[in-house]
Amino acid sequence: MQNLPPDLQFLNKLIFPLLPQINKASLLRIVIWTFAFLILFHFTLPKVPVHLPYQNAMTEQNLTPIATSTNDLRWSRLDQQQLPENSILWISGSSHAIHTPQTNKFTFLPSLVAPQLNGEYSHALNLKMATRAMDNYTAILDGIKRKPAAMIVVLNPFWTLNERALFFKTNLMNRGLDYWTNIKDWPLIPLSISPGNLLWHAVGRHYAPTANSYDILKHLKKSGAISPARKAKKHKKKKSRISYNQSAMFWIINREFKDQEFKKFGVNDWQNTVMAFNDLKYNRWSEHLLRRSFEAITKSHIPTFIYVAPVNPALENQMSYPHYQEVINRISQIASEYKSDHLRVVTHIPANIIRSMTFKDYLHLTNSGEFDEYLVKEINTLLGAQKK
Image (cartoon, rainbow, N blue to C red):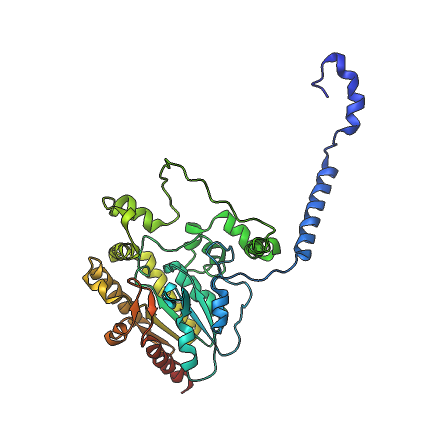
């Protein structure tokens, strides 16, 4: 102990044996024991149930959920890599969740369609809320890898060609590396992948404590081992903070529509504003991702039915309707370039079908009306054509 005063230097002989001796051997022992503990933790960690959004409701409706929570690092299920034979995979956003106000429960559109299809199929549903262009493209690549017998893909007209918001949550990037390592998609990696995403891809998803961290956390909270987080105390004066977590909302509030009073906005107001935010002069990336989606499906030879989610006819009276028409026409134009026997694309749902539906807002449903019967005919036509 060189810092001791001269009169106390005699204590060195007493203290020195108690001090840790740092050298190469001791550091090596620390590293070895750390890795040994981590490996032991991986193999001895008890298995916990998988926690997925709407899991119970989907299971009750004979659907296999594929999507994980927006806070789950996995982004989509790591198991179920190959679906059972004769499986149909549905890839959609919230438009497939039909909310019944009287019971406050959700009925998923695939569960209405499934019993009416010709043939025996099992159905898996990859439902991601607020699906953007990059989300949808990656979900299609993820779906193709699971080798379903057919796919049903829904395009959200509010987001599919919306350049200001290409993805919803950053956990998408953890799976992106599985699919974007090719000559056309590689720019997505340096533009969006972080060191954390690289670490997850290399190690995290293979290590049980991190790969199943969301399930473990949910299980501990449900069992009472961890108490739910306390609500933050409300302060009388709370400073507003700029958030970059939702890019479209940031630009809407702080630039394009900054003179509007957003505190009074309801769901319809936000949807109308987001639709008006579509500007096809600046849709290079979103259009690229849509084209790549069509290319991937064409190359896979998996029979696929793609349709644009129908919207409430009341949108026709809103300022954003011309933007909606431009989006629909552009999707239709792009789809016409990728015609094949196993790809069917519908951008305009018949007016009589839309009139039979009851909308909660401009996109979401409380009653599907005759829409499920319409989808049954379209899907049977697609599947029937593959058997000829």
